[in-house]
Amino acid sequence: MNRISPDNQLGPEQPGTIISHYSTEVAVEDLHGQLFRCYFRQSCDHLVVGDHVKWQLDKGDRGVVTGIAPRKGVLSRHGKDGHEQVMAANVDCLVTMFSAEEALSTLSVDRYLVAAELSNIKAVLVVNKIDLATEEQRDQLESIFDLYASLGYSVHFVSVSKEKGMRALKREFDDKCSIIVGQSGVGKSSLINTLLPHESIRVGEVSSGNRQGKHTTTGAHLYHIPSGGDLIDSAGIRHFNCWHTTSDEIERGFIEFAPYFGLCKFRNCQHAKEPGCALQAAVKDGKISPERLSNYHTMVAELT
Ligand SMILES: Nc1nc2c(ncn2[C@@H]2O[C@H](COP(=O)(O)OP(=O)(O)OP(=O)(O)O)[C@@H](O)[C@H]2O)c(=O)[nH]1
Ligand SMILES: [Mg+2]
Ligand SMILES: [Zn+2]
Image (cartoon, protein in one colour):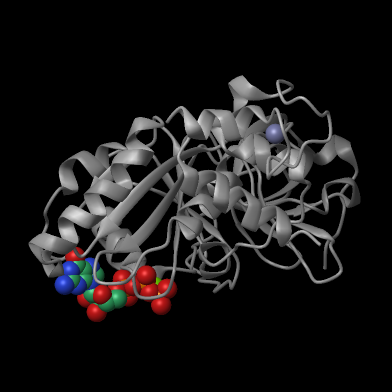
């Protein structure tokens, strides 16, 4: 199937972006927004959606991917064997949704934030279904999320279905490539449908080149948001959450811990009950939230 023509029959090398991935082919978008189905060289067999590539036109409207640019903002997960599976590349922003009607633990918020920090991806926190919250629930949520706002994270209280707070939230997607994650039922698809009003019926489909053929895919897909920015959508990515990592890395994921690195009395301090622990001292001084330190310990304990 994947016939390779001699290079001299190929068009000039040009830049493109992987929009969708099928098992043996990818959809590449050129600089003018046109899509081409491309096969790829063996050296490019680990392409993912969001990859910036070099490609050349082959016969007709087909092409071949010949190179991948270095990635930033990689979102990956780890299989049971610990093998890393990259799911999307060049992601700038991880939008994590929660629902106001469900009990919310700061631990789950911190898991997403650590994942974003370790991938060098901006994190945006969204609390949806605010229309269902009582005043008391709302106050409670606000006190939880004030902490995250004070750490510098963007926090949005919205109702997607009642169109509350949506203007500011939509602006978060401008000029970058985002991914929306969160538990089932929080409203991710509802948000995606308001961002991509014309795409909702064709999630997982793409037309190739000039041809009308449609090809469903179970993988991720990159969409352009009409009001600005790109969105990578994939059910698989929305539910990622296992990260094999080290306690040092988890520590790095709690951004307000950074000023205290190396200040503990013991070099291998676990930041628990040791004397001279700089993080414990910061908690006592009100500089670090006790809950954040406790969530750090929970996540480190899960590593073993
Ligand atoms: N009251 C209220 N309901 C909402 C709001 N946003 C979404 N919903 C409803 O919540 C339900 C779940 O929304 P979805 O968008 O399907 O949730 P999801 O996160 O995509 O769920 P999964 O696909 O299972 O991961 C639907 O019935 C929505 O209509 C909101 O702001 N307020
Ligand atoms: Mg959904
Ligand atoms: Zn310590």
